[in-house]
Structures are given as structure tokens and as C-alpha cells.
Amino acid sequence: MPKPSSDRKSLSPFWARFAKASAFVAVFLSAVPTYQQWFKSFQFNVPFRNVSEAENQDELWQENKDCYKQATPIQVKTSTNDALSVTVCPATGDILLDVQRAGGHQQITRWIGLQNIETTAVASGILSTTAFAAEAPIEIAQVPTVVLCQRFLGPGLLLRRVKFANGQCVDQQINTYSGLVVSTVPASCVPNC
Image (cartoon, rainbow, N blue to C red):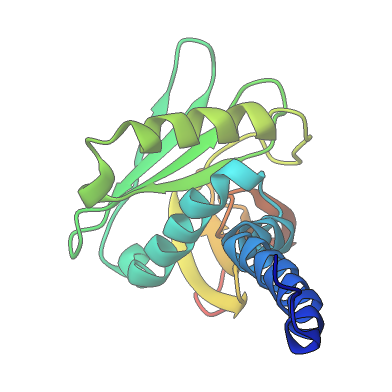
């Protein structure tokens, strides 16, 4: 049996380390999309599984940023005293749904994209967000009757000035990824934000 050469012995550990390093790099790189989704989940303040829907909501807010100028919301009060406002954007056909559940739950503002209307992801996204939002209190138990103005404060944060049926106006800060109204403060009823 021939003896292996000394050159061959010195290459063998090199290739073994190279193979281990390559395997580590391959495993690390295959997990990059997961790391990105975890980062976005933290950044958007939404559950990991809702990152895609959060990005979709933000895109719909961007696409429909001037819809409030062209559309009039339809107000509905349910038999369980939940207040709803539905606005159909004439330019895109997308629907803005403002929900104020009875019992002081946090107001939810969500877009339903015309392209997504037949998918179950929209329905499950709204239901899971409603359940998630039900834990936080809110100061105003009504939905807007008129949107006076709105503008983006930064990525994922929209300022919206609304007027209620009682004549009061407030500025709402809305997380465009989750659809949650994160703050509500009294404001003057002037139509510029």
C-alpha cells in the first residue's frame, strides 16, 4: 500500500476547513431573509407573520394618500355599538375601513386593496389586527366623519386631521404598517396639517 505524500496531508486539513466554512456561510446566507423579516417585524412593531401585510398596508397608504380629498366616508353603527367608517377611493377602488369597537378599544384604520379583496390574507390580517389591538385603550369612541388633511411624518407614520360629527377635530398619528391609531390629540379644525 503506497504512503500518501506529505503534500496531500497538508491539503487535506485545508479542504476540511474550507468545507466547514463553506457550509457555515451557506447556512448563514440561507437565513438572511428570515433575519430581514425579524428586523422588519421589530421596526414596524408588528408580529413576525404579519410583516408582508404590514408592508402592503404601507403601500396602500402611499397609493391612496390623496383619497380623502375625493371621497366621502360612509358612517355605520352596528347593533353592538361598534362605529365603522367606510371610504371607497374613487381613483383606485381601494377601501379604507375605520373601526372603533365599543368598550374603549383602540381605533383601527386599515386599507383593503381592490387587488386583494378576494384573498383570505386580507380577512385574516384584519381579524388578527383587531384581536391584537383590542388590548389598548382609546380616548375618543367615534370614527371620523371628515378627513381634513393628512401627511406623512416619516416612514410608517401618518398624521391625519379628522373632524367628528360633534364638530370636534383631532390629529391622529397612524402606524401605516399596523393600521393602529397610536395617538390622538385635540386640534383646530383647519384643513392643513
